[in-house]
Amino acid sequence: MTDTPERPWRNFYGRVRGKTLRPLQKTRLEGDLPALVLRGVTREENPERTPLRLPGLGVPLWLEIGFGGGEHLVHMARTYPGVTILGAEPFVNGIAQFLGKLAKDPVGNIRLHPGDARDLLELLPEGRLEKVFLNYPDPWPKARHHRRRFVTPEPLALLARAMASGAELRVATDIEDYVRQTLEEVPPAGFALEKGPTDEAWPDWLSTRYEQKALREGRRPYYMTFRRL
Image 1: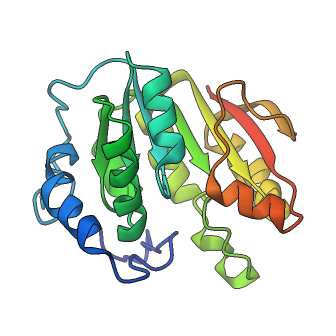
Image 2: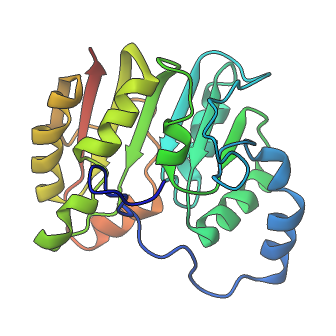
């Protein structure tokens, strides 16, 4: 999707590459990643933006937006083997870390989009997602960058379209202003606040490395649960 006056396409994530990958990580990206990738999501593969058919993917279908190193993604897939969980992540180093975790703890119910979650959301069948996780998204702390946060109208509209009525949206963050914006922006997009913000995590929550860093640095985690109307 390109920028237009009506709908600017601003990245809600930062860099897509970090430190130089180790040889084993490169091998996994070349050998293991292709079998997990959803086809027909990228604009090169699907310039006409034809909706995905998702053959062979189980029901229910969940999504983690920006899965980082994949700790939570693998944990949820292992905890709920009857669910297919999609993961969208543009950061190559995070994907490499996820593949390392998957090699040590194999699960077969994960599919990936190694890119912008919005490209996936706009192609999913309407009302297909039953649970979505937004864990420690990029906070874009500067005020002039707040429009790049995921919890803004354009990404939220795509998310709401793809989620079923009654589907659950979980948001975890350690940034108080992100909490503020989430509470302001998510309900008008078609969601009801069910719980939070609270410091009590979900019973099946796995604390991520981002959360552990926040705790070490003295920041408080906040957890919010919304329900799609």
